[in-house]
Length: 303
Image (cartoon, rainbow, N blue to C red; front, side, top):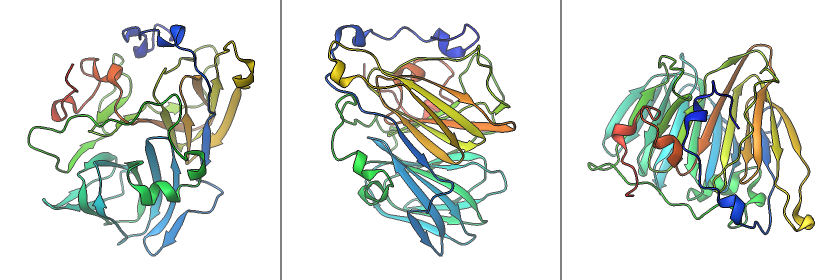
């Protein structure tokens, strides 16, 4: 349910699977607070907080200058968000070394790689559950012992014709009211760096909606938010769930499971910056011309 001013109101209607599909069970949200809690990893490179969803793992690091974050045998492509303009990193892969500026998102190929901090600052690494070292270190790892009933098995999207190499993209992109956020995708995930909201969100202009079969991970970088979730009623009252209104400051993540109806309200008086993450990429967003800013670099699945 979107206001007509919301670009998502132009999305093609999804097939109403939930109208005919009976969900035998539901599972609740996951709220992982990276503030006021102890990091999962702490060493000379900095401090790292880790939380996960079914398919996606988020590693949020306050990194020291000179710190190095290596992946010795990364199983698949992963992403790095560098949210602050003053932060600068150097990323090395088997194809060489490249300097990546702040306020950008990078996609790093599988295999051996290293991120070296040229300055201190924040980096966020996004990997799939196949990176078992990070997945098992997540603060909420016990919530994901196996497959969840409403999330299909993970399937990566096709690789570019020339194979996977380091790619990075600036987040400094002009606003376009016909486009929803700033969306980038790779073979394993989609990053939507939403337009920052100054001050609280108006209570008469929210966007309750649901995803029938994929998770959303909402990463709060600045400000504060309340994530509102509601689950459908089925004929089996034993699986009904209470509504959730989850207040969080930043940094934090909220894992929003399908098929919960959800919307998020910004609460902070200043800048509220949210980033929505999906693994694998969203098909509906990818089908909208001009929405995925790096669509030319990554092919769509056949059909």
